[in-house]
Length: 635
Image 1 (tube, rainbow, N blue to C red):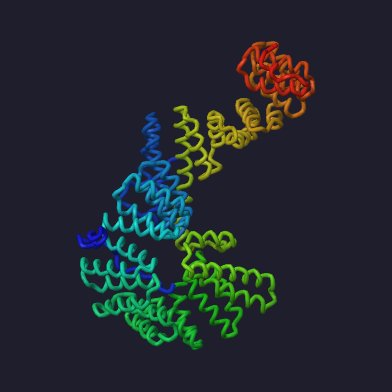
Image 2: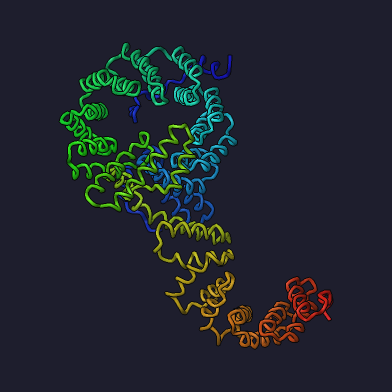
């Protein structure tokens, strides 16, 4: 007896929700009401409120408890980001959810529940390599967690790594034989064309959980989505024998008839769809399929009636509008057809939906555009249709989802310009984020201040950067970010906020010096000269800055001015190696080899280990036809 079978013959977890419906064919004080939108959007109402997290952080900061305040702000931010991500996941914005969860996880790096959510969002956003890396990390931390193996198995399925997927799902079943894990494994077996293993698995599940209509329906759906319609039909019939009123059951049987025999089984399929509607009159799927059948039979009045009802019941389903577009084309109504087809395209956020059915919409739209003289637009639609057909062919060949996604990127198939999310669902999510954004920015800013107080300027810089992402116009942000980045010697990141602040406060000498140093350190000598020039009269009192200014002058062509300035500095500090080295380089720039050699040798006398001066001296000697070995001595 193998491990999987052994697990199934033990007690089953029956927490699975059976009624899945799917198409087989297819830092200011917060106001008291700040989170009113969140109450209608965010779940997890049994958790502490975001208001409580934020108030606690502010209180700790005000009382000078820096370390505890940092912890409290991180908890507020990570919880806020987690709840935002949950909202985004629910409306299908997986990419942004993944970004938000990545930020949340960086604030709670040891929280495996966040890691799981992050990996799931990356998977759903088709960032599969990132998702797998995160799932690997979860399994490393919890090697006996069934959910971790199930998640990685689902990622491997998208990557087309079926054998590895099956191994992970078998491990998940061994650790926790739930129905969810069992059906995921059965689906993997069927995709590998290992029907006997799937059948044995289903038999074990039935033996353990009981012979119910719900189980037979789920088994039938698993067969159906894996491309085994005849086996699905048998399971749906078994389910009907036990409970003919189960929602979606007659529809699923009808859809399986269509998958099995197509037009030959139109009568049987239609009968099942009508039986579904007798029980559930507003089942949009059954209306849509009846419209599809009538359309194929050229019964246009019936087709329009059924498809229009389906569109009324679910105005966000693109497949219905593809069928309506075809109907209008067939009945010589090009304007109506164009409207329906454009709506189908706009609603299709995932071109692979229902086996790339949107390809038909692009093709039909191209024909209409060509007939109405819009040739260039027509060519564009036909090209998209051709590209989608290529992807559909790859899918039919059983190519991995990741390979097809890569091919889609090569073909530059983009999402429609319209928002892929329904306005009624999107609006409260966006409102929640808009109301939270200032508080999130303030919290990141406060974390940056607290980190800087502990001399952790790198962390402070990162916190201030996050604050800018949420509210670029936050008061004092350029000041904070510029100082933190400069103090962390991250000069490239310091330039912009230092420059922004200096534009508004041109008399701030600290920021002028910091910007000049940052510009020079990032290779912008001209920018450094321009920034520091207003300070030129006071530079003698700032020898380190005058040295940098002189070096920048040399590099920007004002070499003689730089040499004069460096000579004065050298006279005041004759034992500074870097002054002699810079003077030597300056003299090289103007072709004064005698003075260049003297200065470089002076630098080496002060510091025999000065490799830069030795390099420049060796190069000079070679150009003079001398042996570079002479640079080994200071004379």
